[in-house]
Length: 277
Image (cartoon, rainbow, N blue to C red; front, side, top):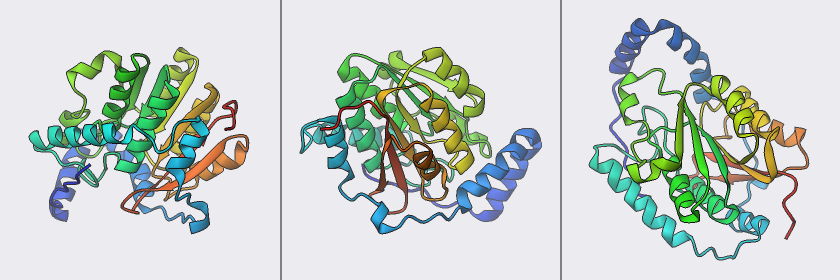
């Protein structure tokens, strides 16, 4: 996926906008600021030995899927289509193009795409939407599978209300029949949703990237994860949430992956019950 970044907004303008947002909704901003601080200033380091440079091939091995994967070219075309759609709306794609948040980068999108195509999930839950790049990737794969549904829990950017109109911009009308968008935080929405669907086949974490929130979401889903179900957890580099979950649940097979640009990391956790190949 081509990456287009937007000019950085000068700090005085950022501060002025934040103050205006605070004046309009002081409760929401006050609640959001601590998590935003820790999300941006965490400093957990993974050693090179913990990174799996062959993660993509190994993931296909876990699924018992063909390697090299024949789905790669199809995803490349989809990512180019998504980038063109966002560009046509005057939106960037890549790092820091949804406020200071980012849409999913290509390595995570590959993991999402191939997990859906090869495991054919019925129930997919994600937290965090932004422009909806991950959502679109999931939905297109579900469409090709001709089965499954995506529930997306999303709290629109709490410190920049201008971005709310761009949430889910990458999701086309043709994809929306398999999509349910739930506005609110994962603490508000996730427990009830997990109870409602009863079993989760694929979970994608891309909301507030703190240890507390990441661990909360993973534990909620783990209680209802189908045998051999998969959790894809973005931005694990700055906190201990993913590592803590792995220690608590040694039966899960976990993989630590570095993004293509080597800025971020994401984790893969495959639940017990999937046959070893």
